[in-house]
Amino acid sequence: PTRQGRVLSGSFASRRRRRRRLSFVPGCSHRVSAMPTLSVKRSLLNAALGRNYSDEEFDELCFEYGVELDDVTSEREEYEKSLPPGAVADPVELSARSAEVVYKIDLPANRYDLLCIEGLSRALRIFSGDDVEAPVVRRVPGPHSMVVDCASASTIRPYVVCGILRGVSFTAERYDSFIDLQDQLHRNLCRNRTLVAIGTHDLGSVDASGPFRFGAEDPGLVNFVPLTHPDGTSFRSDRLLEHYATDPSCKHLKPYVPIIVDSPLYPVVRDCAGNVLSLPPIINGHRSRITLDTTDVFIECTATDLTKANVVLDTVVCMFSQYCADPFVVEAVEIRYDGAPPGDVPGGTSTTPLLSTRTVQASVATIASTIGAPISPADAVRLCRKVQLSPATADGDVLTCTVGPVRSDVLHPIDVAEDIGIAYGFNNIVRKVPATSTVGGEQGINALGDLLREEISRAGYTEVLTHGLTSLADNYTSLRRPVGTDAVHLSNPANVEYEVVRTTLLPGLMKTLQHNRSASFAHGMKLFEVSDVVVADNTHVC
Image (cartoon, rainbow, N blue to C red; front, side, top):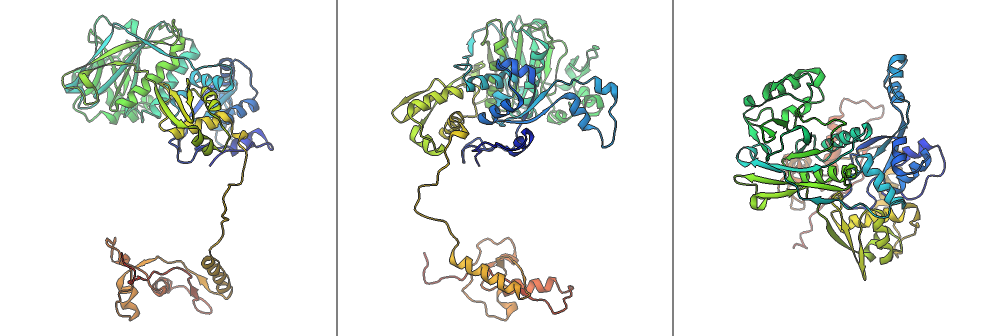
């Protein structure tokens, strides 16, 4: 389904209720049902966008870009909504919650770059023309490395990727967004940490004079102070998981405990001095916690899926490298696999983040035909810039666009067509009658069947609809008919009740009578069915 045409009448809320984004182009890889929701304060979003949008203007911008402004609310309003009917709000609780306006924005589940205010505002600014090009994130070499013990890690979590952000300037809002992006990725792409777990650490608080180390260890030998216990309480890792599984104050971590609790070895990330940085996918250590004073951030993503781990790391560093002392520059970390490396790590070494770009080619004529708009090669190049698929070039009918590290959702030329359709504008696509010479209509046999049903039902009969498959016994023997060769047999019937396709409607009608013998009717039971039967044509056999 497409969302063509603007809803001009009705309230702002009714327009929001009527807009539900599915896939713009049928058959494209963007067809997903679960849509994550990003909550962001209106004042912060307007500041990031560089202009003050009214609620209606921002709703229209979201619609044009293909996302949905689902609700305009506040913390105070959400608290009042959560109260039982008739309950009176606690004045203290109510005053403790902010009345600042909050936007709740529904996003496509595969647009991981939109899961934070940094990515969403960047995309909308480029789409609206306030920014000309998407920023290019550069990777520079660094002195740090991560050594993976393949023998142990391969038993539970074989991959790790890392990166470093230098000179980050955190504010309370940026810090909250940084944490929220990790939560969004954990729920979405990381499949609740089963595929990827993100760990972020203050590089200045750990011993980074040598390589970091990642492997799996005996739970009884791993002791550390977890992030949840700033009082300094140290736990043995197996007892920590028992604590998280039973303590109500840690219920947010309980769902992750089953991921590793039954494993004989637990994955552990340590610095070169042996200090525990994290117990993935459960919790980080308190020693390396990030605060507002943190400037150098070490990011490690342990995973069972290397591709998704690289997507997660690229997303995090591309979104928050804008706050580095040298904006959009990321320091690389060398990953060395000690032992037999996984098959998808050639040579046993890699350097991350990848920040790789690729090109996708598509036919301009096919794009124009798919979205139903007169788009020239020059138009396609210009529109690619609005949806961060630039630089793009056109050589005749062939459009070549560049897919950056955060656009992992672009998998096929049809995805390019979808994005160009969004850039062209839903409301700019003209409705047209298809240029075909056929007109749809009801087949004669179906029209006759409908007329028969109406007349028979008016005569007091009740219509039934029975199964098209039946047994040989019901189709022949029970009707005192010899078993014939006119029935179409199933080669692998699920049971004896579904051996052949019916050649008569009588077995279904008789079974309906059998199962309704207890029903009483003043003038008897009057049933009918108008349906297909199948008879084998033995004269035309392939």
